[in-house]
Image (cartoon, rainbow, N blue to C red; front, side, top):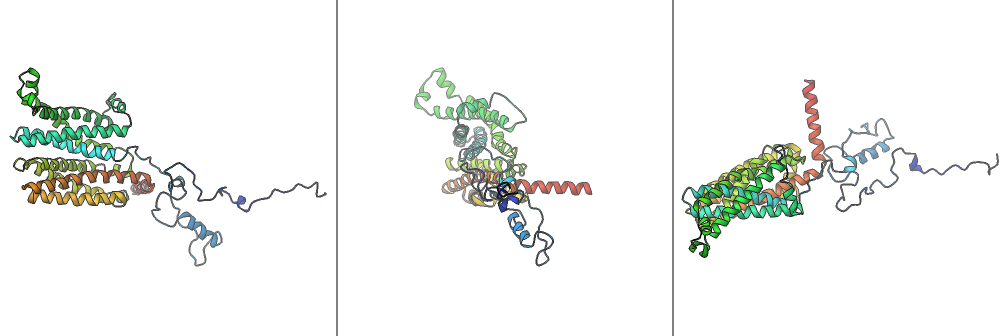
Length: 393
């Protein structure tokens, strides 16, 4: 057969004979969307939990001849390593934004505990503490709703949350806690402020008389206090109900952290703006809340294995370390020098700052855990191993 009649064999690239070899470089990004660097890259976006990487094991295998044992008698292929598909996230991160949501968590908790303090002070002859508690509760509740609406993007979305009441949904239940709480605390604070207006105090009409009514103010204050406790706790249940590893696993402790933090913040702020002779309940509330927060936060940070790691590293770890220092110093200060005006102001400020930083730290830790597949895969494997061991036993 002549050379012209022969079929010319196609040129075969050396790499095309390797099954599964990608047509582009291994390190080429698979997703060019902004903000995905290190996540969409193969092997990127998370740290391996144990063992050498797959690429290193492949190199060692080729060096040893592709099978059997290597030069020193060691196995050329190690134990199978795990990773997510091309290093991508397994759990979708919450769509909540910072600082809107952490500020909402802080202000809502502080307002909840302050409303309870204000209602109690109404019946214990502490008018200054009652006024301070109600003003903090009203201002905090309205500001928290503002941050929540800003996070939602459009105000009507908040109204849409009220169309259906679903008892099994913490978000739905929380919406029906936040709405009456904000209305009642805002009304109580408004009655306090309007009662100090000279024109209202001197007028004899039925409306000024109603505004000056102590009974109406106490009724609104009691109603706000009824929702104050749930307002401080429901946000922790909301976070724990998500699939975010570092929020879901410590779901039994987070309500104690948030309630203790709320008591520390509400009591601390009330100490700052109340004369010391009437601020005794605020000091005791703040110290109790600080103790509960520190104990519960210690369990969150240490009792859940690898899922507790995000609370110690990165921005979240730094914020939580500062938060614990502020909370502990504020509690000691409130106990030792809280009876002095300067001591009450300094201690209350430290307690409020510790509560604020705790909310930011918990929020950042959860978001970090959702972005790293390790915090999903390792606990899943541990649970599978435990079930297999229990079945074998």
